[in-house]
Length: 354
Image 1: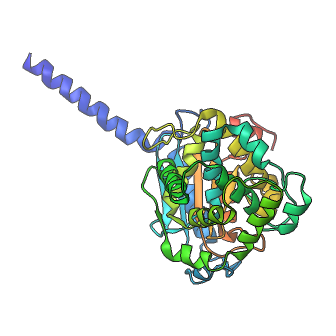
Image 2: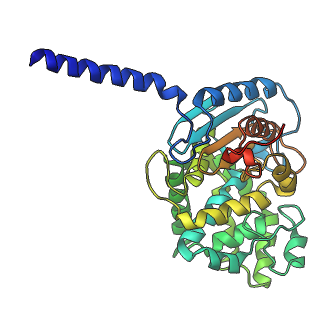
Image 3: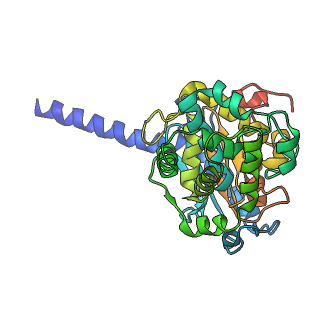
């Protein structure tokens, strides 16, 4: 009997060793995608991308927000989080940067949670503007006057839809929601908020113009202040990748298991990301990369690979459209190497002619 028990324990031990030894070879996000790359493949490609682009000097920091102009332009971090909560990281992954316009994705999600997607579509719209993200002319010229939730006018309108008896109550609800999506408690970067609040007269003008067209649904200046705070939330690149992975996992946080976003809302969010996620660079991004993504002038970009995971990159220097130069190059490289492009049959395991 003793020998049998010892043999059983040995078999269990061998099984556990084999399981852990095989773990690096399991497909990333394998629970939801049968064609995900192995961890070894993903690690190799991420390392290649990091080495290939780490010395790229293109672009410059955003300077219309004083705080962002002072951020070290050499900072560079990459993170991938999968739907089964595996993580790959490289570079400056602990630095907390301001989420900026990437926040618009998650305020859109919160508004949908409260009101449903059709009501948000009715109140805000979902059309590309063909103009800069902070354009006054888009508000005046477009039939909806808001465009979509990812231009500033549409984002301020979206924030105004979120419930709360006071601006503070609304802000705390937004911050809590972001934290649940990230799976960690996030915080306001007070220096960023103060820097933006001192220079956000353009957004205040947009809010008054929205009021003229009845496209803002709470006090205009209070809505701008809450919007300014949401843009000033700090995230590191790993937290941002997990926020993207929550979307990739049909709204369920892969770390906490919480269903933060209703599954039926996720396709609407991803469609907006593919259409308007990179400002005036969105069309080129869809053409070359083919992934729902959102950028922010703080230097971050997160791209979602539905059913597999998300990749986030942080590098402050931006192109003329306001998108991180280095982050775009890294994600395009990784997406092409690992067949992540959603418009390619290879992304679902179909072979294409060489």
